[in-house]
Length: 187
Image (cartoon, rainbow, N blue to C red; front, side, top):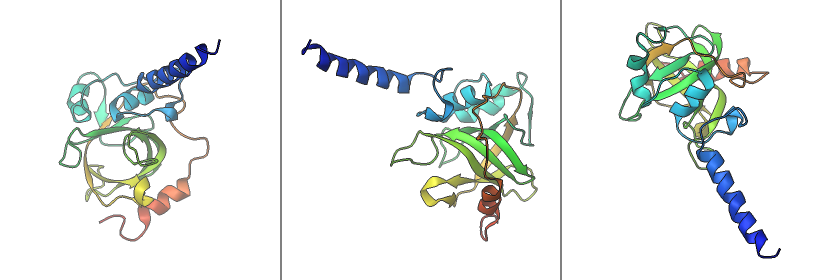
């Protein structure tokens, strides 16, 4: 029996590693996810697109409706840039008002010094001159506010079957508005 316990420890460690590397499943909580934004957005939205985040906009053409207005459960597609060489995708968890929404995504801010973690109901602020969601600022945990970068957006993909875990029961609408409208948050 004594010789079995070290093996159990190795088996438990291997099982935990496999759970983290495995795709999101019904048994795993959406916010327990650690990994890239693409598998997370696919699981959270129900939109079945694969490949780098920046390719989602074109891949959605003819398969899903697309547009430039946020809707709860839609996927927002960030363009490929120097700061985002693979782009980024996230899921709209709440529309707060015409220029502020909350998104749920993975692999943006650092948590405990590491990237990849899921974040729920993060503030996103439309800073585009035409109020068309073509440029945004994103709440960044490392500075506990909107980050300094402005990111170009391709648009929103509609039509999946969003996870019921997409948003919290009591989202902080007031906090999202404060995040967005503090002096210097926009242009």
